[in-house]
Image 1 (cartoon, rainbow, N blue to C red):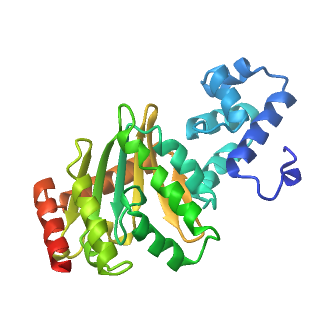
Image 2 (cartoon, rainbow, N blue to C red):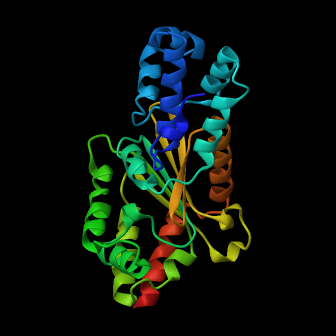
Length: 272
């Protein structure tokens, strides 16, 4: 096996896989093109995986072909599986790189407004309250900068599913919530943004066990799940499809676009 124990303790699974792939290729004296034939991938793909470049990851089919060729008894398959189930403390930095290039962005939120649609004051109340970052203002500035994706040339279509409880949780107090709900209402009027709300009268529905994001890229779909202290990028076709089904199930419980806007307006008027 490759000398994995010599890698830095903070090495990500992506770097780990890259190191392993290079080790086995060089051990067998294979060129990038030759290993590409083994993996049923291009030389370019192999090179990008070996260098752990953003947007390039080993999939299950690559792993199975490598394990069969090198007789590794599922070694690469396990690495790919662990990479997809482990929480990465730096997941958000990777997520924003994908988000900036996405063709479609999907947010489902159970308790808070998605960061892409937060006002600076709403964001400040959340970030300062969490007490997890040293430079609150820098974090807010980064969050606000993400909004550029909404007005870029050929902007993505953005779909938002919100639990109604998001509208009634008074983050930062009435003034901040009034500004936040106004921004959310106006964002829903944008050509490329659709906001739908799951009313509290729904009772049980499939989204009650947690929020997630979905992205459609030029080369397939991704899903992202946030967790305390980290998060997870999901790229496996089977698991991404499960999130697609979950998205559809949640959407089936949501109000239509116009009715959702009316509910937003009602929440805004209740604040006064």
